[in-house]
Length: 105
Image (cartoon, rainbow, N blue to C red; front, side, top):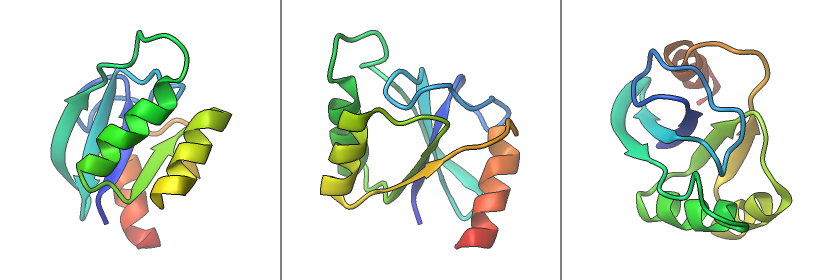
């Protein structure tokens, strides 16, 4: 399943970003492997960035997103797009997180 990880950097060695809509990057993974790293053009935007980010990720075929925190507008947009939102607890690297997601399916 194509999964977007909210990230501070563009590699699997990066750490997760604090907030979904303001993440500097989204690292797309599938099968535990890096597919693509996308700079978040909305990271410095004004209000409502979460919904715009969701639209961009949906266009890429993302079916699941992982971040420590999702704003209410982002959550509404994710629900409407049929994208699963997984809140992140703890602070593994993206590589560790991607590996743990594989055990979830």
